[in-house]
Amino acid sequence: MVKVDEAIIARYAHGDLHFEILVDPKMVQEVRNGKKVSLNDLLASDVIFKNAKKGDKAADENVVKVFGTDNLEEVVYFIIKNGEVQLTTEERRDLVEEKKKQIIDYIATNAIDPRTGAPHPPARIEKALGEVKIRIDPFKKSEEQIDAVIHELRVLLPLKFEKVKVSIKVRADLYGKVINEIKNTGKILKDEWLSDGSWSTVVEIPGGLQTSFIDAINNKVHGACEIKIVK
Image 1 (cartoon, rainbow, N blue to C red):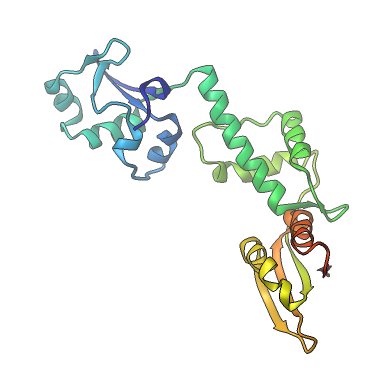
Image 2 (cartoon, one colour):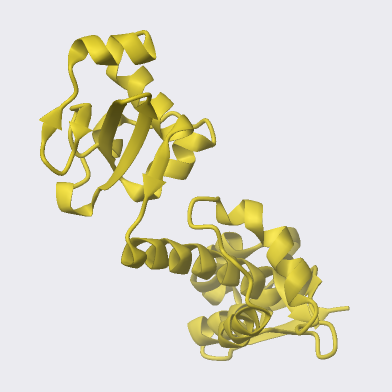
């Protein structure tokens, strides 16, 4: 259950009747997107208020009159989907920053600069975001905003989304040191044990990860491998 001092107020008005609930700001959009969440995680209190700041509880008969039910889940979902959710400046900023970081991470992981074939550093993407002044919606999923952000970013930042293939060859005794990194990062397209006892593979990874992936493999075997981008 979210702490009261970390919750925000979602409110719904019907005529002169007002209803308020205390909710986790990070879960509001999930509910608005139709996702079922635990009320224990969503609410700071299982009370329907008429004034949450004063702690005044809404009359049960008024709840039934307006919502047609006294079922807590149904009332809570109705208020969130049809009412107003107010954030403080700090809460809104924190949610925007969280969504922005998710979008930057996605672009840095999956895109490359077509001029160089190298990934764009996150700092460069963040700087470009600031220059084009893209508005990030704090309540909308980052996945739903990525296409619009990319469209605006292309004005300043050349972006190409593609997978790259990396060829890796290591000695048999080093196989165990690299296999988890390989499986966790990309998709193995082919692998084989060679006549000299070494292991060879071609793995497909997001373009933006090529530098960090190659560095990770080299670090795990202290450079004792053959690794290159397959054209």
